[in-house]
Each structure stands twice: as C-alpha cells, then as structure tokens.
Length: 330
Length: 249
Ligand SMILES: Nc1ncnc2c1ncn2[C@@H]1O[C@H](COP(=O)(O)OP(=O)(O)OP(=O)(O)O)[C@@H](O)[C@H]1O
Ligand SMILES: [Mg+2]
Image 1 (cartoon, protein in one colour):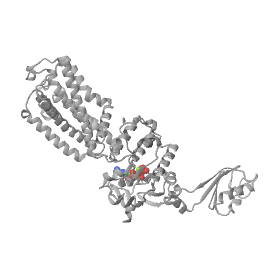
Image 2 (cartoon, rainbow over the protein chains, first blue to last red; image 1 turned 90 degrees about the vertical axis):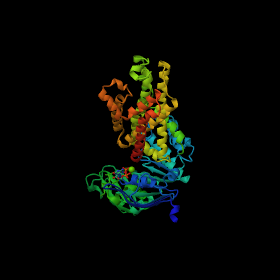
Image 3 (tube, helix red, strand yellow; image 1 turned 30 degrees about the horizontal axis):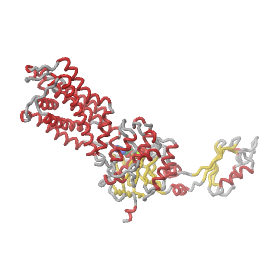
Image 4 (cartoon, chains in turn cyan, yellow; image 1 turned 90 degrees about the horizontal axis):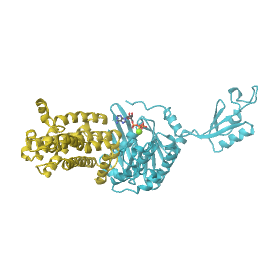
C-alpha cells in the first residue's frame, strides 16, 4: 500500500459536538520529513483535527493512519513514537523544569539527552525553577521541549508559538527546521499566517471545519496572481485632482500616468499621500523607482509587499483570519 | 509502565511541597494528640473505655482514621480535580504513561503519606505518653491498608463526579468534618448524646475507628467482622464506580 509511505493519512474525518460540527470531512496526507501546517481562524477545527490524529479524541467518522498505526487502537505504540504539544495544558505548579524533563523522559522507552534541548530553547538557566514561576513563553518552550524529548518520528505542535516573543519564535522555527533535517515529521497548527508561510513545506487552510486550500505556501500565494505591491508616500499629498499632472495652483505632487505606462503595472491606488502600485514582473520595482526619479517626484518610505497567505485566506473567504470566530456550523 | 518508580518519587515530592496538605496529613493529628494528651493524660480508664487503656491509647487508632479521611476525602479529590482542571492530566495522557500507572503511583503516594502520618502519631504517643497497644502491629497494618484503600476509592469517586477543584474541596469538607466528629475519630463517641451516637452506625469512618481501635485493644478479626465487611464492600463499590466514572479531561 502506497499510503504506508506517508507519515499521516486522514480520510473523511468528521467530529461533532452536539450541534456543532467541529471538523466536517477533512482529508489530507502528510509526507515523511515535511513540516506540515494547518492554519485557520479560531474555532475552525485545528485542535479537534490534530487531537483526533494524536488519538486524544475519538472521531465520529473517517480513517486516520499515523505511521501506519491506528491512533485510537495503537495509542501507546503511537505515544512512544510521536511527540505532542497541546494547545492548553499544564504541569504541576511545583514541578521543576529539570524534574519535568527527567520524569517525562522516563515515560518513554527511548529518550534523548535533554540538557542540550533545554539550552537550545533558552531554558538552560531555568532548570531549578518551578513550572508556575516560568513566564508564559517559557512554559510554552518547556512544552516544546517535552514534545521532543523522545526523539519522535512525528511531532505534533498545536499553536506552536502562541505567546512567544519574536526572538523565541524565530528560535523555535530554526529548531523545527533542524529537527526536520534529522528526519522528524512536523505537524503544526497556527493562526499566524506568516508562521505557516515561513516555516511550512505545505499548508492546509481550514475554515468551518473544512480544508479550503492545501499546497505549498508559494503556490498558494502565486495562484492568487496578486503579484507585488509597491507602497510609498509622496511629499505634498496626492489629491485626486493632482494625479494627472499639476493643473492645480501648486506643483504636481505625483503623476500616476508616468507609472501607469510601465510594463507589468496593473493598478494604482491613492489614499492621502500614500500610493500603492500593484503589478508583477521581475523589474517592476526598479522601473517604478526609475520612473519616479526621472520625473522628479520626491517620495519616501518606499517598500514592496508580496501577497501572502493572509491574502489567500481573504481571497478564499472574504474575511481576514483575525476577523471573527468561525460562526457555529449546524 | 515505564517510569513508574520515577513518577512515584516525583508525585511524592510534589505532595510534600504543598505545605497545607503536608500539615494536615502529617503534623495535625500528632499535634492534636499532644493537645489532648496533655489535657487528659494517659491514665488507664477502664470505666470509660471498657478496658485498661487511657485517652492517648484510644486516640492514636482513632486519629489514624482522621489521617486516612483527610487524605482520601480532601487530598485525593482536590489534587485530582486540580490536575484535571488545569490540564496536568491531559499533559500526562499525551505520553505513554498509562492511566493505571498514574493511579498506582498516586495511590502509593497517598498510602505512604498516611502511613507516615500514623507513624508520627505512634511515635509521639510512645515518646510522650507511654502509648500501650495489645494487638499485633501486622494486623493493624493490614487493617490500615484496607481502610485506606476503601476510603481512597471513595476519594477517587468524588474526584470523578466533581466538576472543579473548588467543588471538590467543598464536597470533601462537607463529608469529612461531620464524619470526623460523629464517628468517634475526632472525639470519643461516649462524649456524644445517645441519639448522636447512633448516627455513627451510618458513617463509614466509624468502621475504620472500630476496626483499628478494636485490633489495637486486642480484639480478634473474627470479633470485628462487621467493620471488615463494611470496608470491603465500600472498597468494591468505590473501585467499581470510580473506575467507570473517572475522567482525564
Ligand atoms: N470539547 C468540546 N466540546 C464542545 N465543543 C467543542 C469542544 N472542542 C471544540 N469544540 C468546538 O469545536 C469547534 C472547533 O474547535 P477547535 O478547538 O478544534 O478549533 P481551533 O481551530 O483549534 O481554534 P483555536 O484557534 O481557537 O484554537 C469550535 O466551535 C469549538 O467550540
Ligand atoms: Mg486550537
């Protein structure tokens, strides 16, 4: 069976809570050695999906295979070979960091040397600290360490970097890439689109318990055809009347027409003194800057923005990820 | 069952790090003994106890029931409900640690704690008041373990049905305190009005007092078949119900 080659296979997964359908027919596969991400707004079913795969919740319908095992029937074998970080969990208040590592590693048949793991996660000097005296981000990092303690073949991380500062976030991303190099498959959920985009080999976007898109982040973004957005500000403002050459009383602040003729420019938007140029093509940015300079427009704060997963979600649902919780699906 | 030993040691340390639990299960009964021992002394008072024993001699086995009751009705439900509420149990469930291993280690810790509490009590009695005992220590140990398991199973039953640790605490107190005063554990039944003395027949803790005190005074197991039967039945029922109703989430 070719499915044996996959780390995870999910087919027709469904889970209801009373009237709420938390997961509504989800199917996908995760390859060995990839970082697979599941993103979506609050309540879209990420935790329910990941916990069904982990064997922590019993699905109503559907088939799940993890390392060729049934997560509900072969749960202890699976626990030995996978690592889990839960979205919400705790340790006893007065358990010290090193005690947690020591006790948790004793639960497994095989475990790794956890000292470097703690160091790598910036908890080296917290070994003697009680769990309750760690900051939220430190607790989160400890849970990542616990999920990796048995050198799992697959690690599940639900809300990997929630509550972490930017430096810790990037540190964890690097750690994830490192363990992928060591052959571990990473399955994570996130509601940070930028995290999914930068870290994941493939991303599934979940909404109302359904997968509405699944691909590499690059392909998802490229399929949008949104290309590049160049944003800058011009001095003196860009009143609509001034757009096409200064026929007002004072000098033209900005002449959109100059840029409008550049190959690849699709659209120009003006708001206040802010100009947004949409288009694609590899020379777009340099040509726009060239054109601004030759026509003597004085501009500042120029930056370019690529379409991102946020835009993908917006295009697919008409909403921003952070907009609102998924309404209850009946 | 990997890591059971380490987990036991960890659970034990965690228990000792909770000052309140530590105080109530270990120090409190011994302090109680000191207090009443100094008030009443330990002169044999056959007219009161029906045998040649003093207040301290009778109080040590009775207070043992308090220790078992505190651990079972307060310690177990509150700890377990707290661990469930805060997601500690969920975190354990995401490892290969089996539920049975978690329970075995925890129950072993509670047993050791109660034994230590009783040890401290006996030691205080012996050193300070010249404690007397007519039965066999082995029998008393067996009765102690039976009583503890029987009460612990009820403790886990309470832990299973209460939704939160606050409610666990309330339920534990409501069951424990009246029982402590009406069962002969906290004070001799003979001091209660006759009507109230009858109530003790309906309180499980009375049977712990009767069993351990009886063995202490030198009665045989045969004489004590009623408390044994009650405690065995409670153990069977408590285990059956709590194993069906226990929740990790
Ligand atoms: N144990 C439960 N009982 C009842 N309803 C639940 C339960 N768990 C989840 N739900 C419901 O199922 C839906 C999906 O929840 P889930 O936790 O899977 O979402 P999520 O994508 O992980 O959200 P978040 O980003 O907030 O973590 C929600 O509507 C939630 O209210
Ligand atoms: Mg979630």
